[in-house]
Image (cartoon, rainbow, N blue to C red; front, side):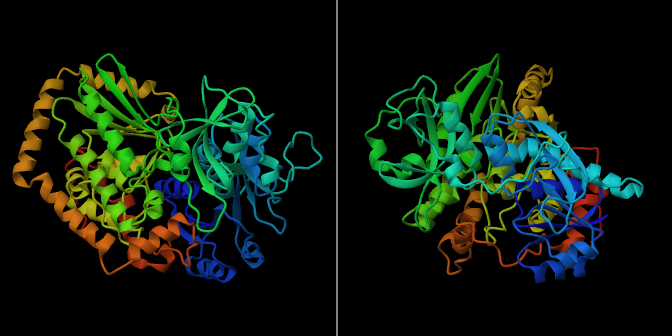
Length: 584
């Protein structure tokens, strides 16, 4: 089918559906819902069989849904209506929730239902559930709806709101007053539920050290307590605040003022936090060991890696190398493996150019350490999404494993043609081949795990359950460590690294990449700084990028088709030596 994805922005759910639909052979184009005129124009240009809206903030024009079948992906159970479905489900402690695919009509979220899928609610943040359980359910529901439509026999249902089996209901937008925290009486669980229901956006309004802020990134602070409402400790950028029966870690805050950024709590309250005791607990970096296998976890908020975090992770990596292990698994976090440099802290710096330079060099130092590790095998186990420099950092390992359902964005160019580093000019062609590497970076499209395996970016697909349960990862690592050819593989790894270094030193790749990055940071063209500002401050785009709006770009349509269907990418041979056979 020809499917137009109509969305407010190309968020995680929109990307996931784009990947899944294109993987199954549908012809998909994307249009940002900027205004009615643009939407109508996109429908005229693409002439879709179906308009699919996974993330909208306003109604589809009536003349569009009357002339085309338009399906809305609503993040709620059948009968639920309103813009804060998942927020309310978390606030009210629902143990099961769902996704409904319904047809657009005049009344929002009230059209005929084509499919609905439920899922158990996990105690986590709204953004985490949205990216994982809700996205999985949405994929299932969308394909169920498409099957019903394509059957030309099955029809949608229109549940009776009076039917007790339909437990959803219309609710207003969740307000700050609905999430307000009373630090003197709320339990730790209540505080966590309120902050987590607003994580990502809009955050929970509160006051800390006399300043109006919004709270994000909350975790239980085990074994800590104090007078309710007081800030009692700090750890790795987070502040611990006491509740009635314990305490919570607050990792990130945003001040209630114009141009304020969401930043680590100790960064915003640097002077106040300096007087607090530092105690363990928040710990985004953790190391575990089982037999001869090391597991290095780094669950950085939203996958962003600041200069200091890169340096701390590099220190932890070197400490892990001092352990007597044969395999070291880089686990990242359960929601994000890495998204590269920390654009938020760069934007907040006195000199964003200088901080960009420090941050990319810290990322490069870490990548170089991984690439040059010679005495064991290193695995990147991607349990969550990865983007930009985070993808190429993962490629520095000997093997890359990725969980089914995650999305990779192996490119930098959407940040105003940022060139990128992390030795990508060495790592990407080594795995995917020069022609495929060019296609990946130029297409600037999200990539699913199946496509990433075909490209050679990923060596093994992990089960969806590995986000929470690392059993499959541990078993694979044990199998790798016990392989009878392990020592021979290590010897081949060292031989190849020596040969690559002799052919062209890593320092040369880095120097060439950083020369281009220096122009991005310090050159006369301010595009990177403008794009970063717009991204951090969530400035809506004035148009859909041509890389996504394929109905507006014939060349991009050709590139995307090649990425999906080129038989050379299905070569059953080595994933590190693909050969492009297709004649452009």
